[in-house]
Length: 168
Image 1: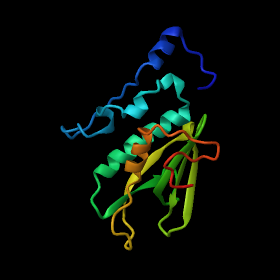
Image 2: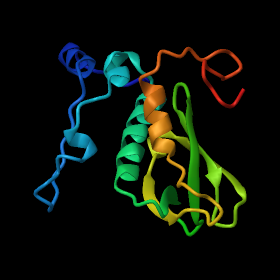
Image 3: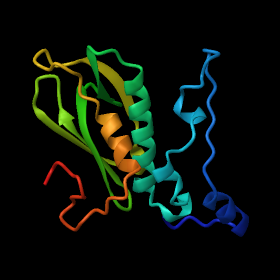
Image 4: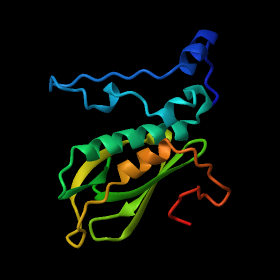
């Protein structure tokens, strides 16, 4: 994942399952991502074999799905841009391009098509709840689609699509 020099002990440690920790003022933190087991699709590939983009992508999906689980039927997930007053992006897709790029697809508050391309070294995401579109009967739940894809065995082809991919 770069030109960082690590000792043999550090390499061995990095090859095992990742660790996570959370401290929260609410005593019931069982629903937080850091306290949940890794999805099977995430755990089957050791961290040492993942690029920074791949590993960031998987963990972002876990956070997005967890955030959506806490929303009512009147709200959808959106992402606020950190470090500026550029508005929010209603998350409609998430991707990565190895070794180090993560991409968010969606629309802004006015409905304009929006895409954020972010280097993993500068990844800083604020998840927000936006009221669902008035014309939508059900809120869009991208996190659940992304999480299902993590556990699939779909192989991505050269054109960027996978089996069951609705973007074909």
